[in-house]
Amino acid sequence: MRKSGGPELAALRPQSRPEPAALLGWYDAHRRTLPWRAASGAQADPYRVWLSEIMLQQTTVTAVQPYYARFLARFPDVNSLASAPAEAVMQAWAGLGYYSRARNLHACARTVVAEHGGRFPATLEGLLALPGVGPYTAAAVGAIAFDLPAAAVDGNVERVISRIYRVEEPLPGAKPRIRALTQALVPARRPGDFAQAMMDLGAMICTPRRPACGVCPWMGPCAARAAGDAESFPRKAPKKAVPSRFGAAFVCVRADGAVLLRTRPPEGLLGGMDEPPGGAWRESDAMPATVELLQEAPFDAPWRLAPGGVRHVFTHFRLELAVFVAIVAPDFAAPAGIRWVRRADLAGSALPNVMRKAVAHGLAFAGGAEPGAA
DNA sequence: CACGCGTGGTC
DNA sequence: TGACCAAGCGT
Image 1 (cartoon, rainbow, N blue to C red):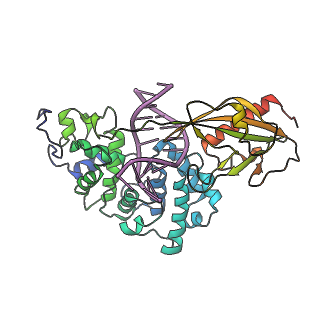
Image 2 (cartoon, helix red, strand yellow):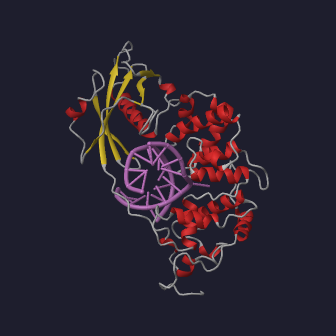
Image 3 (tube, protein in one colour):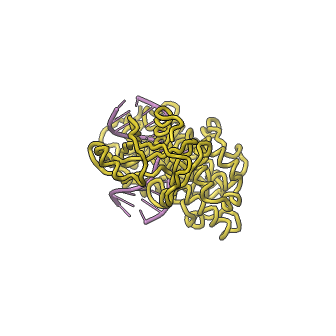
């Protein structure tokens, strides 16, 4: 150890300059092999880089992998994505979450085709102007696909940099400072590898808990490592408690197994995604009485409460859904704005996971309760 | 600029 | 099991 961790160890004062070469050397030896990454030294495809970066926003590599493979097989280039119907894009995204990303992805592909001749702009300003592309994604695509010396600052980089410099200011206020500190490290050569190396370092070594400082290529310059408090960075503003909301889902099943679904409005929570009809969600401490929930039924049918219900956690609230089931005759007409979806077509619908759970819960009850009833 | 916006894994 | 986390963006 070279220094004590006393208060004289000020923030923004690393042990020494973190050398990009040391990080790149580590990256060449230990980089992860990921399906959207070009082989070492090979040129990356902007479409694939962009697609992966959008999918990876606030989403783990593990969750993205199968979606990326399916999505790329179905939409192999920006032209095929741009010409696809919105429903096909939403269906391919269903289950991945943050559905505005899918809407913006589609809009972005159409913009690239309509306004840029099918090629992604090769400047930060051009990229930043695209729907769904913010400062991070513009820098990542710019650096990885176009060799621009841009600082791609994501959660990994915020963690790495805040530890090296022991940035005391909590996020998100510290973002501008961290961005500047990162930009000062971006090398003129291999800026794309530098961006990916920073992310690999954050994912493999400089992890949120129990960072592997002993094998870190930047352990020398890291001020938090010297102070022994790396795990306490980055500082973060306290979060608000998440409230609970309660509501009802109405799963109407036809004798042949078809289910009534509707599509949510394009904006807002689960925008543009499918769902069984449901009532308003109320913020409360407990589930409202059954008779009260039943008043929100979208149409008249022999509704029965399926025991158990569905729990789901969103970013900013917890949801508990009571599930009502009705089994109706083969000639039951779909009300306006609602459509019959055959059982075999459910998998191909744009049901977000919470609604997939609600439908499954209702079908399980219907199947066990009154098979074939009309 | 604070908030809205999904989901699954981890401890 | 609740709290936190994971390659942010739009408003």
